[in-house]
Length: 444
Image (cartoon, rainbow, N blue to C red; front, side, top):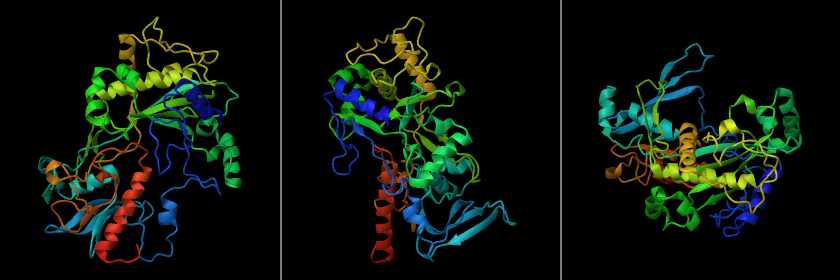
């Protein structure tokens, strides 16, 4: 595919300081500040994406100890005193006569929650574990006071900035925005031999980048303290991921029918954190989620720099034909930064766009209006000391109760500088070892 290749060609010519590597995501070096192809979890034999369900669930039909219930939602953990003994759930299957039946399931040894950064804290709060003020307001009897439940929400703040390209460029727009007949051509190819456009994931190149001295100057004084406190002495911590996405990822109908690509970016360790709490003891009531995106000025500065940096890369790619204006900042009239169509790329040596203070404000307003989740949510049942807002200990036990563990990314005490897929698998694998050890199961 040409677009990722062009991104790497521009990087090699424009940013010799950082350079290229074959695989920034290999498990031995995990390169920071290197441009790289972005290998994906796809089987070389079938072209199918590798996921968690196939190796962990779908291959367990022979396992008589595993029962999977669908259309069910856990309401609360059942306690006898401070000991977890089971869960109460609602069976919500539309095809059953006893729809919305409340069912209680009991455990002889342990209750384990693995419902993610939103589900696990919600179950704890509905069970009486959380901030006393919240539990009292919702008239939920308190089992244990743990004010850290639902706090410390961490995520990656992402932007997808679209650019126009030529109609003969290879993109995934037809798959993402085409009609059924368009999509079926690619689907049939993929089902036949695991190849073709549908075997791609759209992100085929990128970089986890740390700013150099010139970049830090551009980031300005707003970011300086965050850099010194968090990043400067941790060289394994990148600030932002940037890379091309080979289709239009927005919702503006004006873009449909033309070819686009994206140069996207997301902050890897935002200073801003949020929270997620229940609003009712009813498990079907939507949660009260405040992600906290861009609460801190240093996060706004990071995204402003990322926009400028990624745009300069994009303007030099052969496929570039200007910005898709509706999904970019709306700069003041007469601004040098104004977006629009282009006949082709600028030279590698072309001067960078000069942004005024008004331009910067336009970028910040755009980010505040459009920044969104990367669905890399974690941290809301953090593994920390209890007096620091922690919810679980190093053995995954929920503080203040017995026989209750949490085994998902809600336990992460702070963010990770990557897609969270690997981290979730590692938590699950480590949890399996801990559970096996405590239950006396050999050979795990």
